[in-house]
Image (cartoon, rainbow, N blue to C red; front, side, top):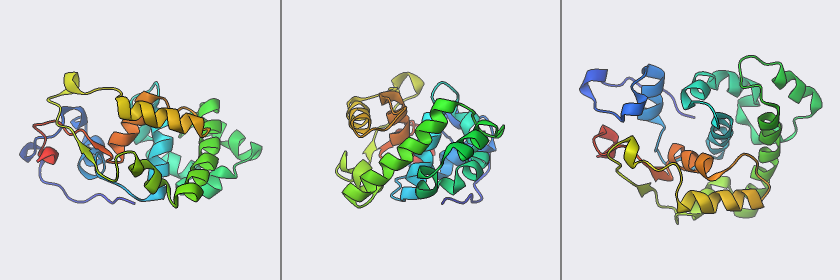
Length: 195
């Protein structure tokens, strides 16, 4: 679990341009995006948030994060894996989250697959980091035009997740996920986080 800390004044720091919309975005950029994570609960949270984001802006999902946490039982993978018809119906009526039936069903299915991966690898962290042998890939793109939407790594991860029964985990979603949890660090070359 990440907590927000006091940061220097906005004008004192040069950040990736995508995060300068407001403090919510800046804090996510400063404290989470690209930071290597090995916490399975957090890895599940970001997995759910990333595939809910498909077709929407990340800001939309980030602004609904607290509602998602409440709706998905703090992203407790075991609780989510046990969601039945009643809970799914409640989620479909929850205006605080994205009420997309297939994505809600995918969250439940992906929780079950996530547990299977934990059982096989000892943790989801062990699994996700095995693709890079435990090393964060550090890129330093000059800006959006140099930032890929998917890579060979995300293609391989997507293919493996789909083979394991995960839903809504295409290569673009997988690349955004790898960036979010720090397996890939794509802070722009001028960003203070790239130093």
